[in-house]
Image 1 (tube, rainbow, N blue to C red):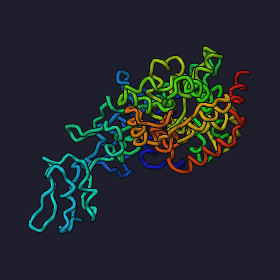
Image 2 (image 1 turned 90 degrees about the vertical axis):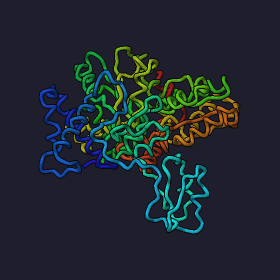
Image 3 (image 1 turned 120 degrees about the vertical axis):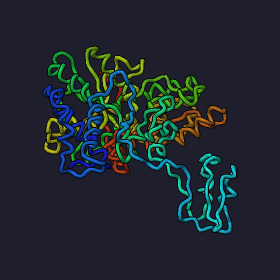
Image 4 (image 1 turned 135 degrees about the vertical axis):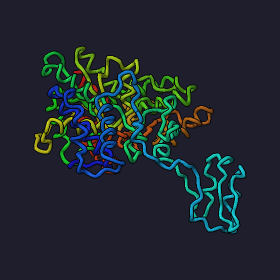
Length: 474
């Protein structure tokens, strides 16, 4: 069995696999209602009240796996009936309160929301509490706990609230589609809609790549995802699915680094544009900095454009760790370049839907990019690549970057820039902690993915950005 971080991911994978399996043979519509029964037969224990609710929820999972409501283009969606009764009380005093003499919680509260009973045990007046958490930080016994649902805690842009039926509600004016809530929800009640059927359709209609060629654009973080096989075997498996070719998004990253170095010299200050969630975060929260975002497309959009400049009839599918990419490819500037997007989770489901024995396949090498382009997958890699591009240009520009990993670091740097207080002249923004190796669409999250991606970068065929781009242009 393939390794997933959680059983929620495993369940999601099973749904996607069965949907894909039926789609290859055009039997999906006839059998779609049978998928919940295949995945959750009656004899299997369920965490729900009954197997029938489990199947109803699975039916919703299937609906989103086949693309969901085509009139609702939102990528991150809530399955209401799967949203269990998570604690939603905010900060509450637990039985760990010792009724101490210090009453530090009272001193920390600026809203006079803390009171005490006859045993000096603390209580919180919810009519006064603003959920600032100062009391919890002050308590020496850690007796005050924040009972907030996991999706709310994971959402650093405060896009999730509690609805009238206690279900999670997403504010799409704030949501940046990073997928943190998808990964955090213990019940899998929040998920990303899938374009897996669109990808199958692209492949089938290519008629074995005779009508048009279909390219898989693989993100560099793929190196740390499929632990049961070698990377070259995974690339062979991708081609076995029916893709004409596999291109490294890292080569697009090389091109982006080169262009960003030129743009930075011209403008004097930039933020990176490679992370679509980071771009969306700036647009929604720091509109004054919108013009400071690099005007380059992301590496995925860039490599797609490079391929389509060679062959205007080809189709491109991005494969990576990023749920926000499913929003990016719908943006106007990417239309006609990226034809669809799937995550590593969905790639695994696609491969297994065709029963491809990955670990038994020969290896297909990837040799498109430089180590700097491949390094985009890890936090700090973009800044390193831009520095290299400046060196290769012979530039004396005083490059002074700040690399931000996660929303909190991004917010801090952008706030300073917005106030004119940032000393740096380049902000590398990665919404996922650690960079793309920590993306919501990864099979696994952790240090292994990072170390394998770094090793993959070190084995690049071209030592310089210019060499990699020059080889492609031949």
